[in-house]
Length: 319
Image 1 (tube, rainbow, N blue to C red):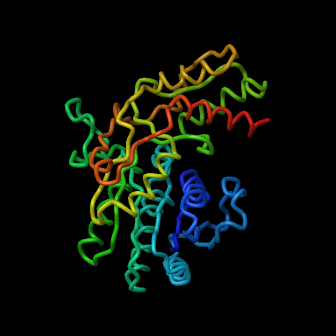
Image 2 (cartoon, helix red, strand yellow):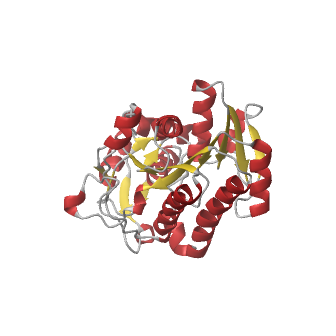
Image 3 (cartoon, one colour):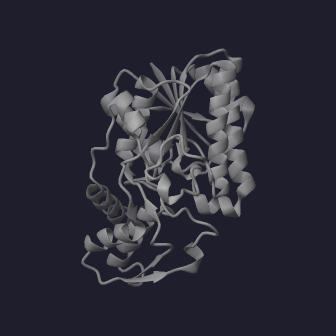
């Protein structure tokens, strides 16, 4: 069996490759990367996966890769995935995320292949969630509140359309927040952890800068999340959409407090206006019972372990 991971050099992509190598030895792994992609997340995979240079916005390049790999499974993870960046570059976010997926689907369609395709959506698609709508089910209205969220709604609906129009076996997963080692430093848990590690090593003054600490989020460890991706392509139903979530919401303030408790350093907390968004989602709490019923998945790694592993990752990286 041959699996193609778009965005293998990224956070979830590299962990997915780790999972497949450890738990699914019969799967041959291919991954796409742009020529300028940073590769530190997959340096340990050298010789274990086959990399294909490809910008997903280039239709000819995408078709060439898909024709060469002829995958049985496609995990489409590549995206511009940072919400604040989508405010600064909305056109680039929409182009990267929507055009990239369109090119991938068209390559599969034109080549008349029949892979199962997992589309990594986001809980940000739900956007404005009313108090009586939590925990959020897949049937909840989509009210996106950022250009990134709009792009993900587009990817979600495009996958549905290609399933209905052409029979592409797309499976849409709406992943709620996931974090862990290797997460980009711009994302909240990783950012806090890097700042704490930097303070411990004397690389930063003993002040941690934060944004909105009152937002509530549903966090899953990335290692549990990529296991869900595998179950999605092997046990879930093509054409369907599934929430992937822990079913527990914590405030960003609680996450910060737990991380600070893992350090002996005396650290002051300051709100940085630059870290506040034009509009923010107050609560994202997911109901993943549909996916759990069909696949048997449930998160196994406690949040405390995720936070500790993330902080240790940054301590090691900065040392």
